[in-house]
View 1 (cartoon, helix red, strand yellow):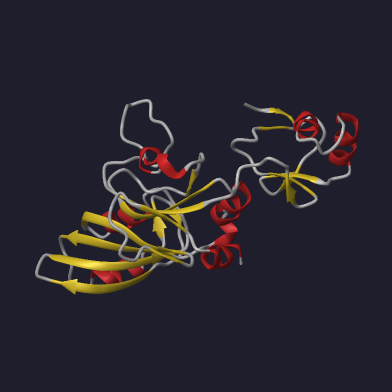
View 2 (tube, helix red, strand yellow):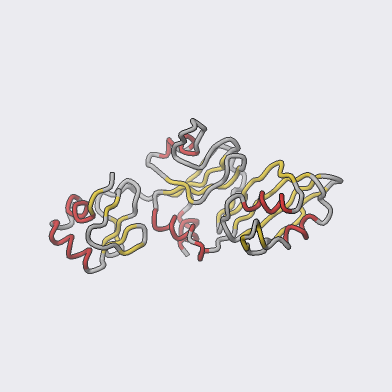
Length: 234
């Protein structure tokens, strides 16, 4: 539940409410990486609240999870349509974590979840341009499909950055491609394939930024190593 920041700082035992107001006015308090003004509210169970760059006492330990999302799950914590969510797959991690970015219900593979709001905001900001690598199984006119996909720079009037595309294997009417993008446009890879007359049979994210999916089985998760977390922060 959201509460005024001066109340949250006071409740943490750091200072009185009046002193907390002075801290906020001095620009010493941030929420999810942004300096806040007096009167701002936050939810300590969801937001990353820092005073002079340090978390408030009693804050949950920050954790970072790499999940191999299976098909058929939506990348939300709850769903009004009753569909299966990724929250169900990580409910035994001990704290409430949030997805960083999205994978649509029919896609699978690497998904990062964390309760570190500052890092999540940084990784999803457009200026980050973190590489995302997908393996895509397609059917249709697959001859020179990689070259055609790499030339797609516009989707429905929206300009996109060119992708790097490689052919992993190819038959007469089917192929498996590796597609690397630097943006997170909605269903971008699927829309690129559709623009080239290709039908996506399967789509799996195998790398994001510095993280590799590896051999993690579908539906399973693991904690990131300290080195992996440090690489993400860089």
